[in-house]
Image 1 (cartoon, rainbow, N blue to C red):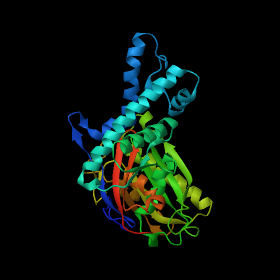
Image 2 (cartoon, rainbow, N blue to C red):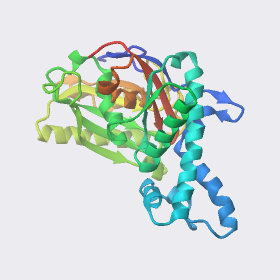
Image 3 (tube, rainbow, N blue to C red):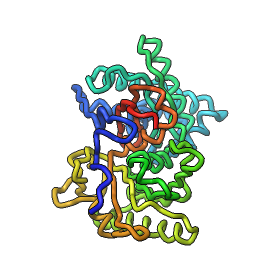
Image 4 (cartoon, rainbow, N blue to C red):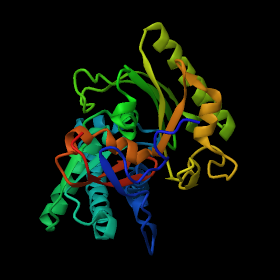
Amino acid sequence: MPVITEHGAKTLPSVEVDSYNLEIRDEEGFVGDRASRGAFNAIIEEWREPLRKLGADPLGDEAIEDISKKQLDALLAGDDHEAAGLIHSAIEAFAQELAHVIRRFLKSASWRDTEAIVIGGGFRQSRVGELAVGRTAVLLKSGGVDIELHLIKNHPDEAGLLGAAHLMPSWTLEGFDGILAVDIGGTNIRTGLVELNLKKSSKLEKAQVWKSELWRHGDEKTKRDEAVERMTDMLKDLLKQAAKAKINLAPVIGVGCPGLIDADGSIETGAQNLPGNWESKGFNLPAAIREAIPEIGKHETAVVMHNDAVVQGLSELPIMRTYEHWGALTIGTGLGNVRFTTRSKR
C-alpha cells in the first residue's frame, strides 16, 4: 500500500507536532472539559436554576441543548436585557474557565514558550464564542500572561478539511487540482473536496473547499461500521462530482479524527464520542477507507490520518508560520488541543 507519511506523525512538512490530545487532570477531572461547549451550556444552566425558582428564567422552558448558537447570539443582541445579561454572565464565567485551562496548558513542558494560540471549533462560530475568546485574552494579559489569541480565520466547518492538505509533502500534490478530506467529530462527519490552487500560491494560501457533505451522526443511533460506510459513500459521491467537473484529484485522502493516532492508523484513546468502538485493536480506519476506495484516478489511494485538532490547526499555517511556537484549541463536543513548532516557511 502506498505510504506518504506515517499516521499521527510528529514531524510534518512545515511543523513539528510537539503535543496533541494532551490530557491534564486536576481534582475535578480532565482540565480541558472545563472549556467545552458542554461546559458553556452547564454554566448557563447554573445561572438559570435560581431564576427558574423565581419564575424569571429569561430563556423560558426551552432546554439549553435545544437553543442554537444563532439563538444565543440573537438574545445577546436583542431587546430583552435580562436574557442578554444572562448570556453575558455565562460568557464571563466561561472565559474564566478557558483562561484557567490555557494557563494549565502553558505550564506543561510541551507547551512552554507558546507565543500564540488559534481558537477554533464550532463554539468559535458565534458572536458568543468570539466574545468569550476576547474576554479570555483580556484576562490572560491582565494576569501577566503574554500570549496572543487568534480566532481561526477559516470557517470551522472548512478548517478541518483545509488542514488536511498540510499533512502531505508538497511534491505529492504538484500537478493536481485537489484532494479529498474527512473531518470526523463527536457530532458530525464532514467530507470535502479541497481545491489546492497551487498556481496562485505554492504555500496553499489560496486553498479552498470546493464542495463538502455533512452527516450528523450524533442525531442517529448508528454503529461504527455503518458510520464508516456512510463516510466512504460520501467520499465516492465527491469523486463522481470531481470527475464530472474535470477536477484532477491527487490519489490521497487526508483524515482528521479525534483521539491519539498511532503510526499504523489505529486509535489508541480519545475516540469515546464516536459511534461504536473506534479504539478496537481490530479496527483501522485508513485501511477501511482504502478498501472502499482502492484507487483515485489511475493510482492507488493513500490515506493520511491525524488528530482532528492537529488538522484544524494546520489550516491556519499560512497565517501562523510567522510564530515559532504556537498552538490551537478547538472548542466543540470536547476541547481539542495541539502545540506546533514551525520548521519550514513552506
